[in-house]
Image (tube, each protein chain N blue to C red):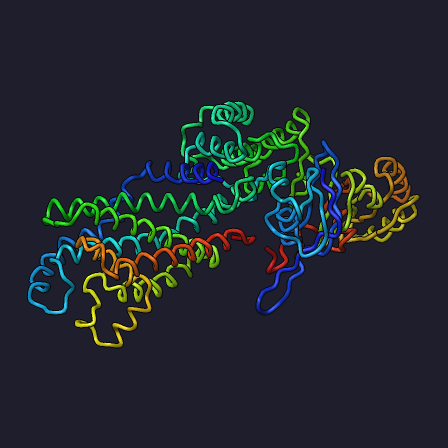
Length: 255
Length: 322
């Protein structure tokens, strides 16, 4: 099983390494936010009450990491749809390789790619914009981003395998991702002081809002706050559920 | 090698239930090259997908390469090779990588996988293409790569779904050679589907004719053709003589299915070659000047026509078939 997962991982990684440009294209959006939106945040954070503690970059950078994790991984399903239409997936499904390995190998590949992008983003924020954050906190944050990637790409594969259509997948993706991203409070944190009550409550229902809080706490080096614990537990639970869903879909025929 | 009983598959969608395969029995012995012939939508691919563990049968049972299809699908997958209709190689991969990783999927070591890949590439005329991206291959080359992928683990049983569809005549003839040599030189049992009559005729030891989810005829191409009663003879005669000519033809021993057009008479006789001299003499005796003559051995299309009541070529055009 490990060997099979490794083989599937290696195959997809080999393809990605051949066109590393995609890694860069994937972080263009968060980098643009960093460059074109970050400087605005500095003033806003300084003058608006209700923001969580920490400076603008400590608030924005983890937000962009979560955005990268959510948004980037959600698109993983497109690669699966391509493999379905070229018959690659079906070819692999007739080999003795376990269906779970076919999923996990892909998911791990997406996770590694995401981590590379996340590290690039953090380094850029630190070098160019003077982000200051404890190393341990950033490392913890990256672990959470990795889990986020596993969770979201598993879901993306499950949805793609169920829809099996390059026409219906994008609209489904958009209708899920936009509310999810907004309710996570990536750019402006959805705190009790900043948001009206209903919006705050709504965001608490979104598991990724808790992950967001945990990442910001980690960036501030506050390892003892409840937010970090809640976020980590929530993240682990949704990740396990997502992988289970993906595995179940991959086991079903036709997937 | 394959023993299937009552294999059936129904697809349910919101509005209707489609019985794609309605209980087929299939027996294929080791070393046979068997073709599954039928129009598009007859259930060929569905049957193949069931036999290769991709689709769970709604009913029936099967033993494939000695393993039970329903309880040991992993065992079946280890034993068989499968080449899907559209192939299964990724356009963005290099030929050599696809072959190597495919071998490793079957548990071969890296070195062994590379060694076998090289041998296969040579055998299938792919040498020199190893470093190419799959998307740069021609249709025939890509098809041979897909076949190489299906053979990397030296399976004793290979399923080929429409192996030559969409290929130019030269590539087809070339691929036929390769498929024959699989059986002749390597003892591989081959089960293929095709909607090409000439392919089934030229390539297969035995043909199973499927129509509308049911096997309607089975046998060697010659056996099948002999079920059609006799050769078709068409004689061209002057328009005013068709009636007389038809009467003469009808009196030939064993002649039947006599029909006429404006200036031809067609009929079937058990043996066209021996009936001709007699026909010529009789026509001459009546002073009818023949303008042309044609004798046709029965084709598999005639077989299809006899068992289903329609021509395979017409059956291809059934709307909604997939």
